[in-house]
Length: 146
Image (cartoon, rainbow, N blue to C red; front, top):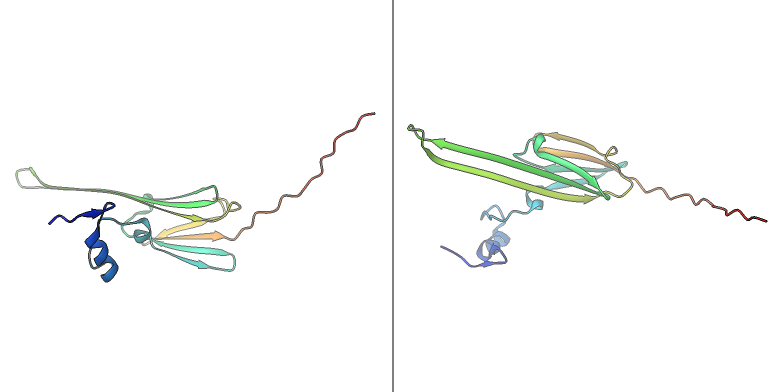
């Protein structure tokens, strides 16, 4: 049965998701935060981010640092095809998905400072605490002739 949508999502599914939790009624609208769950832990030297990326391989994951923001992108493409005994296609399924999540790490942190490891579907990032060093004020004199 077709249900009216509100701003691109099914209103009934949204109500059931809020009441029973998103695992009860699957919704076609998945946000990056729900598919890229992250645990952030503060340590003495910085922060540790453990991000769940089930179903992704290391080659599917990319981390980028730009303007003080670290952006994690996970992209996955699969294609399954089944044929009957005559060689005719009876089913073909494709999936393409991209998830992206950003964290502000500060302007003083460089890509060399961040340590990343991917194991068993979990991306672990070690981000140091770094304060931008204040610029030392240098006096610049103007030569006076005469």
